[in-house]
Image (tube, rainbow, N blue to C red; front, side, top):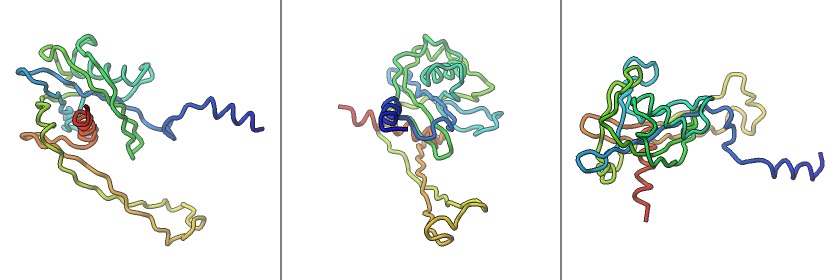
Length: 207
């Protein structure tokens, strides 16, 4: 392979997240609704019958399927399925930053408006209940921030002798930040809080 071939291949490459093809991809929507004359954010409580994270608070969303043309389409589809609304009920949808999880997930997030919240009929197989929180609460209250430490432990067959330092290599303890919003008796944390905090930062920083 000569220099010309290399230049042509690199020129055609579209940058992406390294290892993107091995990530599980998900899409979520931050739903804004009008209630009592002010904007609220709608949240779901996951069904207690679900195997993963039963009872956790989250936004509508789920895995990006092969049939979804885009992550935005996946977020709309999942919102429709979970809240029992039509695509026409979801308007003014815009993308936020995506999250690369250390646990092999790529989460695409969006924000949009639900025109007729009274038309919502939750899917009980996925959603236990829904509730809303005034947007002003998040604009006026910062999340509480805590940290989780996790250690790196190589597999037994890891070639420790091939790296400088060998068994004495200084594997750093990693810290993962977790944010918590507490509203009445509701605890909003994890990726939901991370995405929510990012959205609120955008609103604070907008000119």
